[in-house]
Amino acid sequence: MDKIVRERLFSMSEEKYRDFSKALIPGCDNMLGVRVPLIRKYARELLRENEDWQGLLEEDDLYFEETMLRGFITGIATAKEDDVKIARKKLNEFLLYINNWSINDGFCKEFRIIDKHHDEFIKDIEKMTASKKEYVARAGLVLLLEHYVKIDMAGNKIARKKTVDRYDIDLEGILTDEGVIEERNALQSDSDTSKVRYNNEAPNSVYKGKYTDKILELVNRDFSAYGYYTQMAAGWLLAECFVTFPKRTWEYLTDTDCLKLDKLSYQKAVRKICESLTPDKEVKLKVKKDLKQM
Image (cartoon, rainbow, N blue to C red; front, side, top):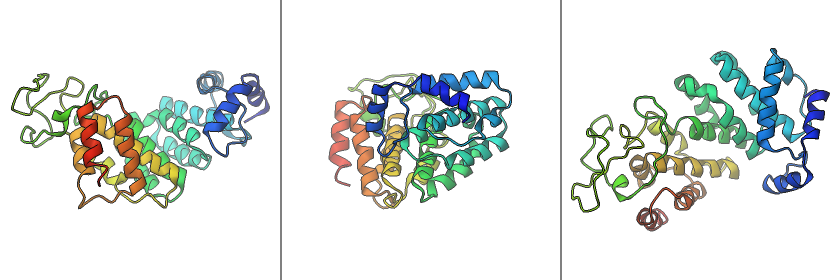
């Protein structure tokens, strides 16, 4: 980044915040201590003032915040331009700058052009998740988490479920061939014997979403050689799948014949599910009992 940008970042830095953040991001010794919302806000300011946004990225970065700023500029600008070819090029360029989980996750969340072009980017993400480079693989997994998990069968973005209870993982015999419950918006009590509970959050997609099977296919591998932060992302991704489409994710997690996921990634998924506020007490007990034995 150029001198003016660097000076502005210095002016926003906080020593106490720097020390706090460095403790969370091992090995990051080039941090100024600028809060992430301020970096994102500054990225938008720079884009308003500079038509040639790619020119802002020509000089190398010296500090963590400059790389985070680079990621935000790339994500915001490519979404606005809506040019898949340029965005794909910039995605692959930015992967070379990622050297910690914070830069990785901040960029992936902001790379919102994917929300308009899921199918066009899925091949790129397939390659990323197969990479043995830790943060390339993590980026692929986090892009899936941020932009693909909550897409229903109709291609619409939905909210994660407010509650996951035993009916959500015991839905045998009530699904259509398309994975859609025919009757909608009806809530049945625990005393009902039909084992059916419908969910207002995702009435059309209780079983799975458009990309659920693809996500489970890409995460179903041994990540033990990919690095700790890739394994953590795999577990996080599966936990998010569980609180969005619990039945389909439960089937994957309990299918010992097809499960290829490494032990640490699997354990992380179980832990994240149990830490979530979404599954109720009964489901958490079932998760601890059935999944921790896998």
